[in-house]
Image 1 (tube, rainbow, N blue to C red):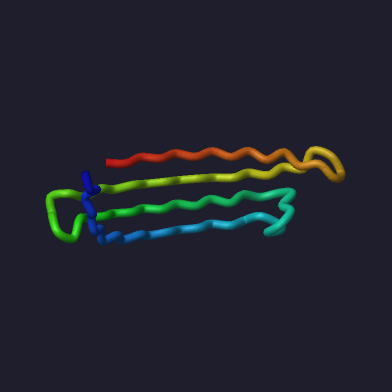
Image 2 (cartoon, rainbow, N blue to C red):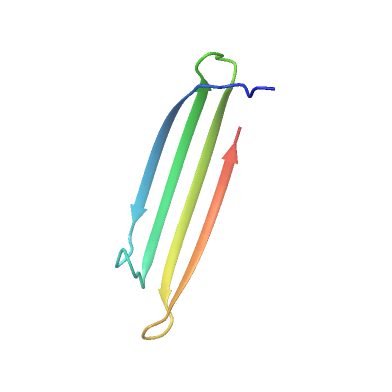
Length: 78
């Protein structure tokens, strides 16, 4: 049996807040991101979905060359 093809239109909104001291090897600061996505079937307007993803990373120096990094993430969808 052939698979059904579904065409989707999608709108995405992304936000980023970056207070890290370095992009490649951060030792202090934080990075937070958020994405809000809404999608709808092109051929059938009754099919739609929403998705929210929030992520935060925090960095603290613990020794001269060591860093403690903590990450948290929250996701929701409809």
